[in-house]
Structure formats: C-alpha cells, structure tokens
Length: 256
Ligand code: DGL
Image (cartoon, rainbow, N blue to C red; front, top):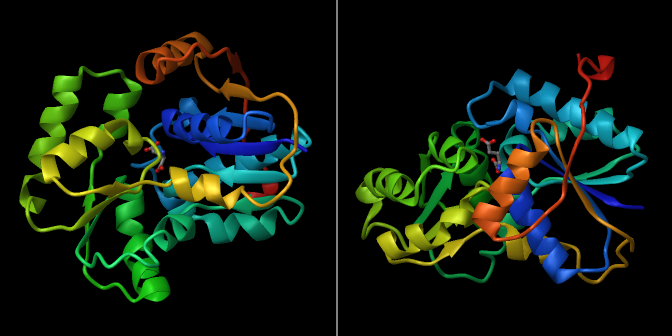
C-alpha cells in the first residue's frame, strides 16, 4: 500500500523528491496542504486540526502508513494524533533527525526551524534525552517558509538568513535544518556559518531502507493551486512535476 507523505508544501516535496531518488519504484502519495501554509506560525490547536484533517484524508485514500514530513507537526502534535488513528502507521521525523548525531562528537549545535518547532522545545528536549547533548541553541526563522513558498528572490532570502544567523557565527559546530523546507537554503547557511548542516533527508531515506516498500506510481497533490506548485517545483527543484488538486475536508469529530 502506497506510503503517504504530509507537509504544508515545498518541504514535503524536498522529502518526496529525495525518497523518489532513493527508491524510484516505490509508491508515495504526497499531500501538500498549501491552503494552510505556513504551519510554523499556527497554534497547537490549529496544527492538531490540520494534522487530523489530513490523516482523515489519507484514510479515505486507503493509505495505511503516513510519514509526517514536517517538523512543526512532529514537534507539536505527533503523540496526540497517533492514538486517534490506530489503523494508520504515523511516523514523525524529530527522533530520526536527532539520532543522526549519535556518533557525532559535535556539542555546540544550532537548531533552525519554524517558530512552532522552536517554541515547542522538542529539539533541545530530544537532544538531551536521546543523546545527552546539552549545548543546543535555537533560532526561529518565521519569514523563511513564506519567502520560499512565495518564490522570493535569492538575494532577499540570503539577506534575511545572514542577518538572522550573524549572532551564531563562530559560536556553533553544526546546524540542524529542522524544517523540511530548509534543505533549499543549505548552501547559504553552510557558507555563511562555515560549519556543516544536517537535515532530515538522509535519516528519512535510511528509515525506509531494509524493508519492502510498496511498488507502484507516485503522485503529488496540493490543496491550493496545482499550476503554481508545479511552477514552484520547476523553479526550486528544476523538475517538471504534474501536481493534482485535492480538497481536505474539515471537522473530523475524532479530533475535537
Ligand atoms: N516544512 C514544515 C516543517 O518542517 C512546515 C513549515 C511551515 O509550513 O511553516 O516545519
């Protein structure tokens, strides 16, 4: 059975794109809930509703397994949605992302993410709990997802990042790109801070290795504007993708 992938937009596409590259014959169905993007500035209740509505949508498609390719949902509500959908295997990405540091000696780590993820404290908590790493600084970048989704000029994105990251220059040994949109700015971050960055893509690919994946076709759907999403993908990933329109219905009573 096809594996579902969920995010607010291009972040999930970066995951979908990486998984398609690694497992070209496997079947994935990516739901980009761009109508509700960005997720990063939403309250926990709003994120719970968005996540639940999407899980109900996946259930209706006959999906049995969903990868939440979104740190904000993973940070805020993953433990709450799992018991609401006992027949869905739901995987968040924070443990996967943190665990890649298992045998990595870096201690001074900077986490970059949405405001929702940063305010949840999920990353410092998991770094300490799973790996006993305590020197974690965090910086929210609330403008970055709107800039990427809005296809803002590179110079504008670079200026925002450099201004935001200046206080962390020479003070960190590694950066976690803890929003799935951020691999799109990996080079800018690494060049400015002059340290390596770590995102969720390799841990996600590894997560799906050593098991049989469902074979078949894959598909990208958006809740907003398929032609615009195809243009975003062409601009940022240099890829021709057919994007389909779908509607996610609201008010699943199980989530109230
Ligand atoms: N890409 C998502 C994340 O990893 C959501 C970003 C957003 O919509 O603000 O957090």
